[in-house]
Length: 419
Ligand SMILES: Cc1cc2nc3c(=O)[nH]c(=O)nc-3n(C[C@H](O)[C@H](O)[C@H](O)COP(=O)(O)OP(=O)(O)OC[C@H]3O[C@@H](n4cnc5c(N)ncnc54)[C@H](O)[C@@H]3O)c2cc1C
Image 1 (cartoon, protein in one colour):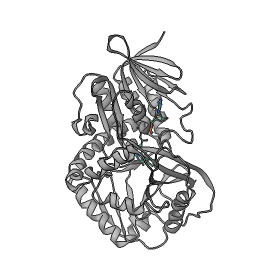
Image 2: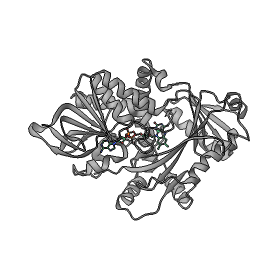
Image 3: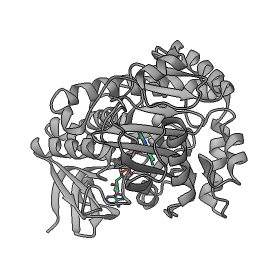
Image 4: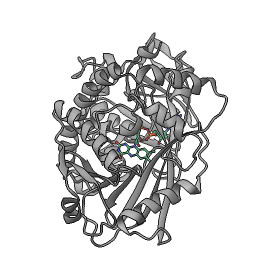
């Protein structure tokens, strides 16, 4: 006989774990399933992402000019943004929608939506971290974005001006201010921005801690269990067919990151979420690297201190499900860290990781009920922000599942917007 629960969450990344935590805290009987047997295998959810909490990031990926830059970079597989040319209807549809979303008017409309999500999520991150945040190395002390080229610094300063209008705190730092914070800094800088409300944490430890909190509140977590399909069950419930047998739930939350479209397709929904491969490389943290993340804006390389490790990360590759590790990308990250911070690019290497970001064409997540399949809630498409926006997404999912009015307007996040 199939097992039954109130809500079944598919996907144990930061979004699914936060949803399970919020649902269980609400008193629902929750089961979370994750296809991987371990939390941190080399390829599953973005468990080794850059670990940034970035409420300052209110510019959607679909910003004016971004596609043109991306297309210019297309021929250079070592560039920070790379689209592997390939015949794919889904990719063409995605690029077409991206192009339509990358207008000044739509980017201006998306920024306050992201800002509202971030503001609510940061408050929830703080509240969650007040009970055990040291377990996931939570720091809420800001982030420095540094630029080597004056033109790049000017452009970033203009972006910060626009973000300030929404209430984002952004201070301009001179090279000497940056050097005071990062004594190991080498080479010339044009300047930097300091975002005081940003933070960082270990994403794998955070995700695990949210799953632990969910279990402490009564949720069941089943690893090594992959959802294959969703089918109607008696009394309007949903059967989730898995590799470990059928599970029946009153409601299902699809939080399978970039894998979600495959499950949504079976529900008649063509979800334009593309897997956008990104890399991270863990090296030894220099003794003088502070507890403050540094983003090298020109090189698009993040340096996040995590205990005694330093994580170098980023790059964005639209190569479908090709998860090949391109060594020139790893080398690019290490070269940037050597040039700016003097971290030897042939020094000890702890881990190379790559994983797929769930990329929507308009840069906004998808949170809402599936049209005509009202018992299924989508929570995906968080692009480069799934760790930052996990807690607010969990809260919105719990509100929807509990039949309450969502605390934020879900219209801009609706799955129907791509119809
Ligand atoms: C290099 C890199 C750096 C990043 N840095 C940051 C950052 O600093 N800050 C930030 O906020 N975001 C960052 N991101 C983005 C962030 O990692 C994603 O937005 C986030 O992981 C999305 O969370 P998710 O839970 O929706 O999906 P995922 O993290 O992808 O998790 C989905 C989970 O679902 C599981 N799953 C898939 N299919 C099934 C199935 N059928 N049945 C059961 N389980 C299934 C997968 O195994 C996976 O564990 C980064 C991403 C990358 C790649």
